Length: 287
Image 1 (cartoon, rainbow, N blue to C red):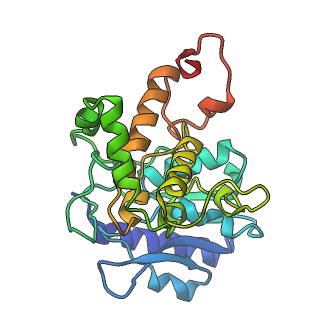
Image 2: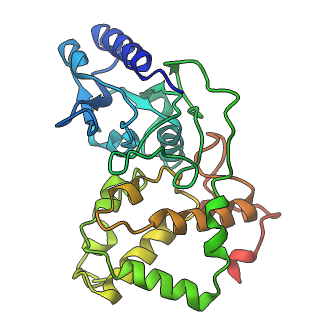
Image 3: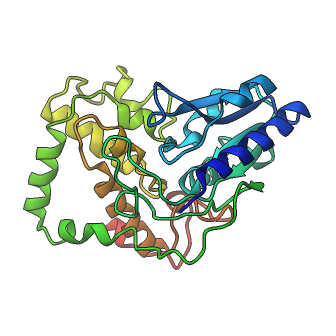
């Protein structure tokens, strides 16, 4: 189990050094919210701000979501758990941020919890990794010896459904959507401005929380994230009505991995699967 206090102390130490030396103007991390179970994303911009930084088992926000809010910063330091680091890799690949403009403070972590349920977060709703895939400074020892379960094992019951049952399942789930867009706000890959659903010329879908518009919004978003979702599970945890969005994302991610031999955000040298062409690629996606 991760020593969260040690990680917090190391995070503060490195943040202080970076800000004192003026190597970065901002460190993206976490601060206490209204209680310890609800920390919030935090931008430390001065040495005095460093004392507000926290890290505990409830620091689930994917901090890569906030990286592009600071376009004028010459360099940004960011606290990055495994999934956060994968998101940063995808953002670098998509040329939304340059690797040399980041100081990645890697956080190896196991034992993260969902503040809604207090249950451990594991490979059922995430990629199941413990160590960041890309970092400059590692804030704790790499986690070794922990069993890593397949992130796709949770799909067994879903994949046993026939097409009609899957359609009925998703229609029932997506009919619950109140169109609060919390999933979009939580996702580090949802950076389009404006989002297609907010456009009115052309108007792609009804914005009212009704079945046809809900289906259009979610299916378009699902496919927009094909080959890009880094399996952090934040969309599902943010959903106030409990739609298991992670299931669809995992299913698409599994098929992308089977067809193209790579998972999103795992290697900085990879090219995103849907913008790269290789002669040996599977043509299953065209069928």
